[in-house]
Image (tube, rainbow, N blue to C red; front, side):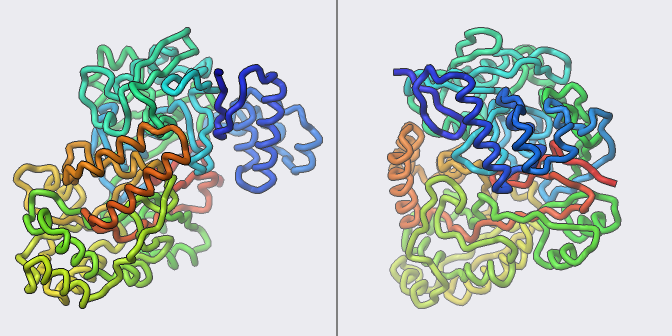
Length: 564
């Protein structure tokens, strides 16, 4: 039997009458608006995205929509249908170390840039990872355990003026998923998937095997022009051509300038110009925000929280990121770590992680108690807690054959990226030395750290660095086996459980698999989870409707605006 799977995950038999489906979606949108989960503008955008007409004047009046009721439903960008205005300068703590080559980057900074330039088949605008919503796809229907049909949005054009069709979806998904002979990084969080173009606005995705995290993978896969992928792939490294709300007009190593896309299918953005700029020093970022030279900054450190909160002109948007900050061991660089589980556990017992979150990181940070971050699907807290216990650590070092703590190893930290990273690592090394361990701190920037991690002649054994994900364990744990395998111990059980979790489509069974995997990783301690990140954006109060979500540290400026 064919079933239709709604964007909220509900399964329905085919044949549901269109007006019944429309009414159901309108009721859900009304409920979310009433609970304060979406704004009035988002309500209009959501209902029109599903083709639901706003023929409910009584409801609109009851919710005091006011002037928003007169807003053109299809133009959720510029509220009055006029020209976008203003410029937003956003200062990023992470440099732009990846280029625009489609599906070759796993940099968080690149995902956040892509979100402004490209569109995706679906979106998670509320942050609820179990409820995808339409974007370039307007509906989906599951045909069998490996086949999904998507209806596509009509009237969408790329920045170069070419019409968006099913051929673009085919080229994008097949390239990103590893179904072509072009090797791409994104394939590590996919299974090979072929796409049948039924017509210009209908496609069928067929995965090589059942694939549970399909919607999460689609959320991370920007839709690129088929013509570009076929004939201009090299040029896309420097000049992206998306269907999103902004076009790239300047591409410098530390500065990206975007101009409003007046042909955007959901209406032009309200902001005319977006400037993304890498500024490593957090004090410089804050000073620029205070002086009005920047309208938003990210990775606000704890010492700046009160300054921004007490300002009449500034405000904070804070969430606990779906991100583990770990001490990542680089397999092959420190033999004792590679060969001794007792040594790895001794390291885990040598760190006071609660003190890190309570005294240093602060904000919305929380002690990590799993390799799957809190907020992700199927997350389960693990035990023991690996609190700071010098006696336990020393006992395990003796069992590992190194009662003196073993040889020296390099612990790398990037300055200016993760809040208070240097103080965190100094605190960690102080407690490690109490049990005899011999870490040597190497301080660099994020680019230098990335170079050392991936270099064949790198010298770091351990790195204080984070890994963010969209919230599905398949993506959250993909780094344990790839891409490139730099963090992998080639643990067969890890590989097997990750493969089983990805291939399982039943949510309950997926949960059981990831429960077993989290327990195994916690027992083996291939790396040391420290805390779930505080993710705080500071911005001017004049910048309204900015979307800040924990999945992939999303900072989305559509349909935000600058209000004078």
